[in-house]
Length: 104
Image 1 (tube, rainbow, N blue to C red):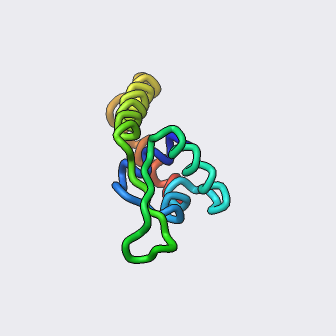
Image 2 (image 1 turned 60 degrees about the horizontal axis):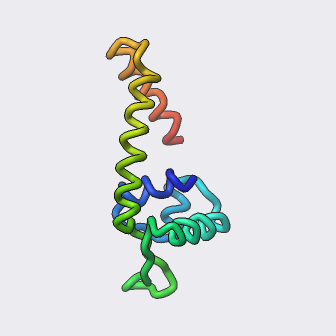
């Protein structure tokens, strides 16, 4: 879940804790723990939302940006290995179908 959180923040740039929870499909009560662990690892930075001081803005720290790049590289390599037996058209079909499932 930590990798999913890092990648969600990478995609969005900045998220609130609630937005992060929705992005990774995690209950709000559990997001706080993920955020605390990622802060402790210095992968994210938090700051008060300038509009709503009750909200916390989450963004990647420099180490988080580096970690996100490693995750993306590893993910691409794993995807290539997994899809290697498929023809290009089959790959496209599988990815399209999995994307539809994931968006439900």
